[in-house]
Image (cartoon, rainbow, N blue to C red; front, side):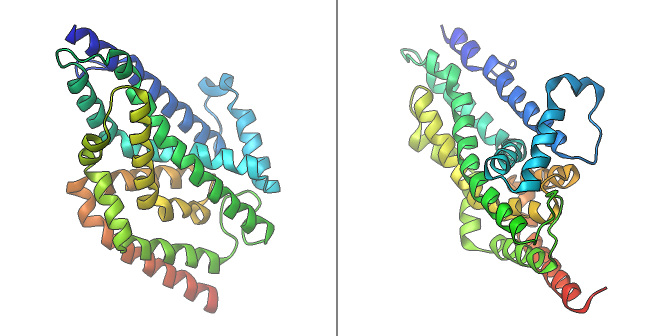
Length: 276
C-alpha cells in the first residue's frame, strides 16, 4: 500500500504525473516568455503552438496599455520566472507529504496525488495578483509617456533610477530578509500548516507565494527597466533570484546586490542630469 501511495503522489525513484504536469506548465510559461520577445524568431518546432498569436497579443497589449493584456503578460512572466525559484521548496514539500501520507493507517493517497499541483497553483495565484499591480503600473507609465509602447524599456532615466533605488533599498530591508529567510527554510511553514488533501497544500502555496512576492517584488519590477519583453533580462533575473533563495549561495549576494542596485540608480540619475 505504501508503494502505491508513493506512485500516486510522486516518489524519489522517478517523476510522477503531478511533477510532469508542473514541468509541462513551466515549459509552456517559458514558451510564452519566448513568444513575448519580439526580437527573436520562434524556433520552427514551436510554430504549431500558437505562440505567434500570443506574441501579437502581447505586443498589442503593450502598445495600447490594455490592462487585461498587460495582466496576462505579467502573469505569464511571474509563473515562468518565479516557479523555478520555488522548485527546491516544492520538492521538500512533496517529500514531506509522501512521508506523512504513506504512514500506516494514513488515508491520504488521493490527496497526495494533487498536493504538488495544488501547492504550485496557490503559489502562482499570488503572483497573478501581483501581476495585476505590475500591469497597472506599466499601463500608467505607457500612458504618461515614460515607457516605450513596445514595453521593452523605460523611456525615462529618472523612472529607471527610481526603480533601481527602490529595489536596492528593499534588498537591504528587514522585511526582505524575513521573507527571504522563510523562502530559504520553508519546512517550519510546511509542518505548521500541513494537512491531507489539496486544499491545505493550496494554502501553503499561497503562503509561499506571499513570502516570495515579499522577497522578489522589487526585483521583478526591474523588468520595467530591463524590458518586459526582453528574454535575456528575464532569464538572468530568474537565475539571480534562484541563487538568492539558496542558503549557501544567496546569503553572500543579497546585500552586495542591494548596494550594486543603489550604485546603478546613482549612475543612472547622474547620467539623466548631466547627459552622456
